[in-house]
Image (tube, rainbow, N blue to C red):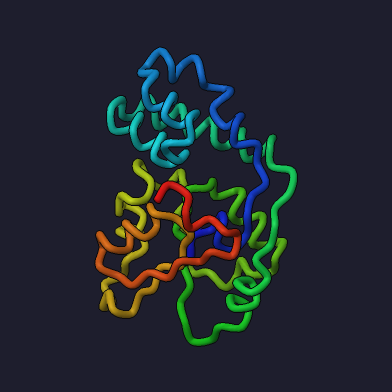
Length: 184
């Protein structure tokens, strides 16, 4: 199982503007999680989970619409992790999956550009789950009953590592983009 952003590629996005379209709505709901995010105390995923846990579908719909526009309109480029891309291209006899907090349209477009979309049998993206990692709903959508010893989650974040631990699978920290200290 691969994470996407900052594992296979790194999306070059203006993260300081990630909540700009919905800032006022978030402030009206509860300013505290937004303030923590703006102070770099929590990640964008943790921010989303905080609001969805407290406000349910209302917050989920807000983030789904926001994230789609953010990734569609503000994403101008991405950086490639060539080693990981080559690994994916050359792995044989392994089923490969994606578990990502990004939108499906972004994931599929970039994997297609990298000519590796067909390597993945299943993708769980932002719109497929209510709560992001470290919550395990994404894994539950990927899990096919095979022994968990057959799974390896390759990711870049504390949330990725915690999710792997919660479901009882091995984890490999991919630090190509030098992010292991982020939110740890």
